[in-house]
Length: 475
Ligand code: NAD
Image 1 (cartoon, rainbow, N blue to C red):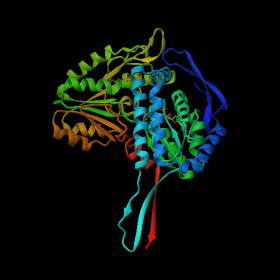
Image 2: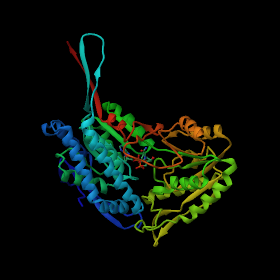
Image 3: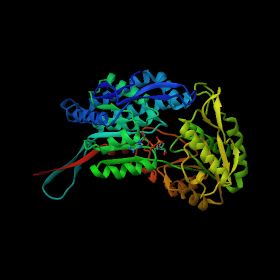
Image 4: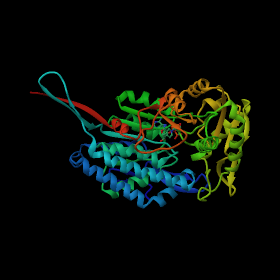
């Protein structure tokens, strides 16, 4: 596969090259070109030139949609290979990478369908006028994505942006640029004009920052940490860019005593351990109603102990490698902080190796966690669950909302009235009832509070990539 930068339809050398490591084997995986400020500038200019070019502006919306369908087909044809690349780069089990690629394919198809269905309105204004709105592309989009779902989160931004008629400069995370480069390769093969999608791997503080500051970028679509999101929002003020921010989370997964407990325990397990817990919506705070606490914790601990880290290419593996040594150390430091604060470790807690190598962490469960502890208040982004206890619905809701974040939440109950009541009371962008961690291109996803604003996916996301123009015609 290509490992240079995709700028204006050509593969160009970066400012330098750097090495990627397979986090499961610690072997060198690939050497990739890195964008400096000059390459970011070139990519933005290529995107701008394409946006202004006749062949892009005059491309019919239906034809744009057809290009997105073609890109989805090409992704699907190479899905096995792309999933393998993702697993080598990120460390996640192969079966998860296959789900990621399938979701990316669906996302391109979903927005391919939207391309020719974006319409304005005719407006019933007073007076003798014909007044209507046009929905126009916002322009050049800088898409900045993290390392946990490298292809999928890129698709969540690139697909609606292209469908709306924008052009894109995609900056993948420094750790995981490979599937973004493959996406660029396939966009060219699908027939997108040069500069419609540019892919520029590089470090956040240099390449990412240059994209945020560039005066020819109209909008930044960002997924990543709250801290970087705050910086981007401040910095984007200089050029008054449109910004959408999909940020961190510390999502509550609430088990009421009347729930189907077997299903709730399975949901709690997959809610935190899917994706090694490197999932923005991970159900990392498990709130359990007092009367079922002991049963839930004991079943969960048993399941967590059986969930041993394994070779991501083994079809039975359900817990892969942490993305990098640095992230592994961060997760372990949170585990140490949990023990120090007096939470009780009931499963896991240690680093692990598979075949003597890799940055793995055991599936870890803390009982007796309390607000005020770092493991309860802060996003760990690893396979670490904190269990808290509550008495009654009111306290459950209060505890669930006691967080700076508001990305997602889970509710487990058989009481249909309670389910809807609590769903309404929770301050989060997504609430799952008797299920957890499901996504679909049609379902908007994003945060309340410090989890950001703007929505990825669904028809909502198209608003991020369009401007509304009102036209008044005197009759
Ligand atoms: P991060 O914020 O460190 O990096 C995200 C991206 O921003 C990367 O591409 C990085 O290179 C870039 N970046 C870093 N500093 C930058 C700067 N100064 N200017 C411009 N770009 C910069 O996050 P991460 O560690 O890669 O990912 C984990 C975080 O992402 C977690 O907080 C997680 O919750 C969040 N996340 C959120 C969602 C969501 O939809 N809300 C989804 C996945 C991950």
